[in-house]
Length: 108
Image (cartoon, rainbow, N blue to C red):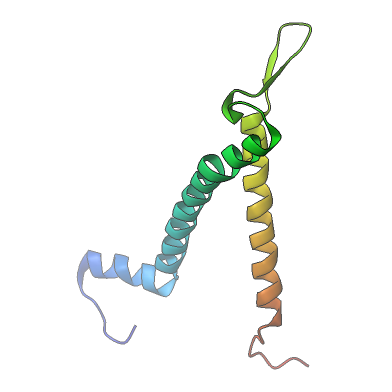
């Protein structure tokens, strides 16, 4: 920060700038929006296409009924498993990419 901001608001914004909280907040917002987009892609494109190829009905209603009468909905669980797998693959890809970038530190 080159210029000293005056007042409580300036001090508050200074903390955001100094601690990089603004960048963290923006990254969180982008990740949240990306997760919503990914969920929409899986629920509205991937799952209907997958269940159309398998010949099942609606993926949201796909269930296994146990002898005790308990109903296990496996379609929504499969959707969330696909979402989790994609997120893990993206994280692994980002970490792999970041490991290749030189840190700029003098390693001795």
